[in-house]
Image (cartoon, rainbow, N blue to C red; front, side, top):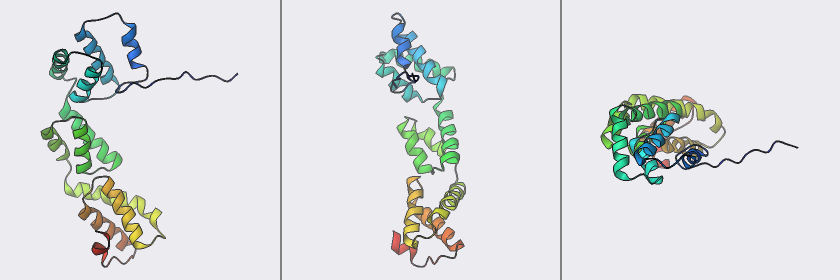
Length: 193
């Protein structure tokens, strides 16, 4: 008889069966529960203060207790939204090729303070962002060979747009890539945008 896999349920904001351990414990002081929840969530991956606050609210931790626990975690360095934002920008730009605009949007959804977002995305300069866009287009260019020019441009520029690149940057990088292959790019601006 084949081995039957045990069905695991995914809890929002946690790991599979993450709340099971909490349910097995005797009732605790809300501050102890809040600390345990935060420590467990921080074990897997760094999180922002807002992400942890949301997780505590979902588990019915009183707001004043959550605020106190989260402040203490910030004081001892377990929560650092600035470091989180810096690491996020570094990872997502180099790993996925995201532009500053897309990175800022992601950090906003994670609840990072706008000033910290500006500092983190400010690490990327225009030249660095454009070089990444060129690398992305170079990787995708081969798969568009044989298509008509306008379709290639839409496909390549669309890929860059989804990654947060401005239309002007996207079009310039795509035009340069097509010209390097000998493609005629005259009138490209009017045709696409």
